[in-house]
Every structure is written in structure tokens, then in C-alpha cells.
Image (tube, rainbow, N blue to C red; front, top):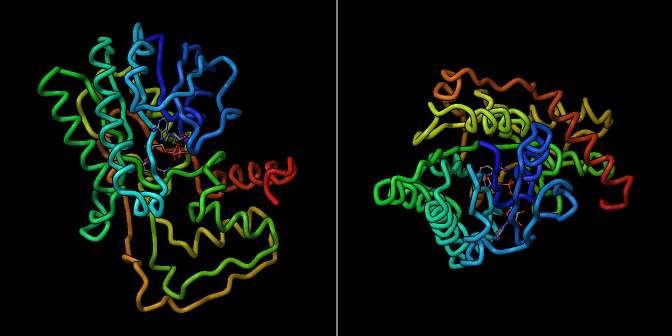
Length: 306
Ligand SMILES: NC(=O)c1ccc[n+]([C@@H]2O[C@H](COP(=O)([O-])OP(=O)(O)OC[C@H]3O[C@@H](n4cnc5c(N)ncnc54)[C@H](O)[C@@H]3O)[C@@H](O)[C@H]2O)c1
């Protein structure tokens, strides 16, 4: 494996992965339409193409590529709910187009991003983001059956770290709290946020497994859940962020409204399949959140956060 193509390369996970692949000596080609991602996050050494994954013009870019990481997606849940048709167009039809490009070019393996949203219960599965990710699994099965495409489904839980999209409204929970603390604002927590717990994985740990996928054929045609293997409550996240940011601020504690769409979701990834292949998440919450806070502080100093 020498030449690697990443879709969604200008985004959070894609740009961090590109850094790792370039550092490891791979030749990297990147695709992104910059709908959410930022051009400056793509490393210089990458051959970058600003193009939509739904376009047939992506096909020639896959020629000579050994492996693909398909990460491009519309993945802000409120955005997905606002526009179901575009969500399915990008996340399902776009995925089919990437698989099609890969099989036409004879790519050896395609790693693609699934989401824990597909296993977070019936209510979550009614959301268009989850629906689009379920569709991806079916498209994957179709491409394996019809064309023998080698795929690896990577079911990410809550990924966090530098370059997570803080411009999004609302930003992901860790970034939202960190931004508020850095701006001197008190985050709002709900009384029951000690029971509102999710499995958070630091982006470098995720990328350790991505790199392993390139070298290890035992992963082929399988699905892996990628998380830390621990559930951390929103209250614990706040406490840890307060510690690493050195903020004196206490949260405002509120009662959760009765009409809230809160699903009391406690997520916990069963990471045994990836662990059995020698992978393990290494970053503890405090170290990961320190890196996130350092990144946001730096963005604030550059004037990108006001
Ligand atoms: N971050 C998480 O916690 C998480 C959890 C589960 C699954 N995922 C999945 O991982 C993948 C990467 O997520 P991320 O957090 O890096 O998101 P991100 O939004 O930071 O990156 C996605 C990138 O895809 C690009 N993109 C969107 N539509 C496109 C299109 N039509 N054509 C070309 N490029 C397009 C965006 O511009 C962006 O740069 C996504 O598939 C997402 O659904 C992420």
C-alpha cells in the first residue's frame, strides 16, 4: 500500500489522518468539496482536489490508488434533519459513487466511516443521519456481493480532538464546553448529565487503527467498533475540561425540559474485535482534552474564535 485516497480530507478526522499518512511516508490524494472542511487543514504534501464525492469526475482520481478512506459526509445532525434529501444524496448516493470509483479502478481496499448512531436505539434510527449510515452498510453489502470489493466498516463512537468543527451550530459537546470556558461563559448542564454518558475516542487513537488497516489484511471485509471502551458522562467531561483549562467557572445546572429529545443514551463501544488484532486506545481523557483545549486556545489567539 503506497498511494492512499481520503474523501473528506479537509475535515476533522480526514485532516488528522492525512497528517499521519504523510508522516508515515504514504502518497496521499485528497477529495473534499469544502462544505464543512477547511483547505488550510490539508497538509501541503497532499494532492488535493476540491470536488464533490457525488461527481463522476472523481473516477480518474482513483486510478493507481491502493486504498481509500471514505470519510466525506454530511454529519451535523440538525443539518441532516433540515435536509433529508441532500443528506441521503451525499451520505448514501455519494458513498455508492465512491465505492463505484474504487471498484472501477481496482482499489485493493476501502475503509469507510460508519457511526454508532446506527446502534443507539429506535429513536436515533429515525434520524436521517442514522438512516443514511444504515444505507451505507447496505450499499457496502451490495458492492461486496456484486463486485467483490474489499471493504472495512469503521463504526466510530464520539471522536474528539484538535480540528473538530467548532464552527458548527451547535458544536460537538466537548468543543462547545471548551469554547464557553475559554470565552468566560458558564456552560449549561442538566441535572441528570451524570447519567448522560458516551464513549469518547481521541482522534489519534482512531488513526492508529486506520494505519493498521493498511497493513493488516485480517481486517478485510469486517466491521469494527472504534471507541475508548469507556463511557464518560457529560458531567465528567465538564469537570475534566474545567481542570485542563484552569477555568474557575462553575456550570449552570438546569432541569431537562420534559419535551427534550434526550434519549438517555449511554453509549459504550464493544472494541474487542479491534483489540483482538492488537489495537488499543492509548489516550486518557485528560490528555486528549488538554490537546483539544490547546488547539482551541491557539485558534482564539489567531483570531478565528471571537
Ligand atoms: N466525528 C465523529 O464523532 C464521528 C462519529 C461517527 C462517525 N463519523 C463519521 O466520520 C466521518 C468524518 O467525520 P468528521 O468528524 O471528520 O466530519 P467533518 O465534517 O469534519 O468532515 C467531513 C468532510 O467531508 C466533506 N464533505 C461533505 N460533503 C461532501 C461532498 N458531498 N463531497 C466532498 N466532500 C464532502 C466536508 O467538507 C468535510 O471536510 C463522517 O463520515 C462522519 O459521519 C464521525
